[in-house]
Each structure stands twice: as structure tokens, then as C-alpha cells.
Image (cartoon, rainbow, N blue to C red; front, top):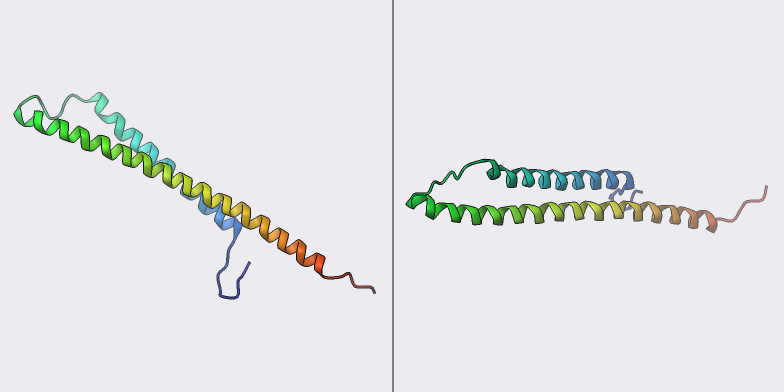
Length: 111
């Protein structure tokens, strides 16, 4: 539907955007899971020396914070995609209702 100010809204494009946004959120979640699993198969890369015993726990804390942030980001992006999908459905329904109301407002012409 084209608005007088030039903005065009398409429920098809909204739906496609929603799917793309959800996909990005899923990709981030998968990458975060891969990142989380990496240290499980590796020995302690920081070692058990003085420096390693200082850096290792700091790295582990930063890594945990990053993983939590990535998970929250992925969830937020997926939620935004879901919201855009709902917008698409609502827009399509509103357009249909407006067309039906417009058709009902025009009396049948007698020939």
C-alpha cells in the first residue's frame, strides 16, 4: 500500500525481513555455542605458572560474560524478528479489512 508521503509498506517484505532477522539471531546463537564448546577440548592454554594463574581466571570470567552477552543478543534479535513477523500478519489483516470496508462502502450500481 502506497502512502501519500511516499512510504510503501509490504507485508511480503516485512515477512521476508522477519525471517532474515530471526535467521541472524539463530546464527549468532550457533556461533556462541561453538565458542562455548571450544575450551572443552583444549588443555589450559594459560598454564599453571604465576602469569597463567593470574590471566586464566580473568580470561574465563571475560569469556563467560561475553557468552552471556552473545546469548542475550541472539535472543533479542530473534525476538525482534518475531515482532516484525507479527507486524507483517497484522499489516496484511489491516489491508484486507480496509479493502473490504472500502468495497462495502461503495453501493452496487444498478445497470
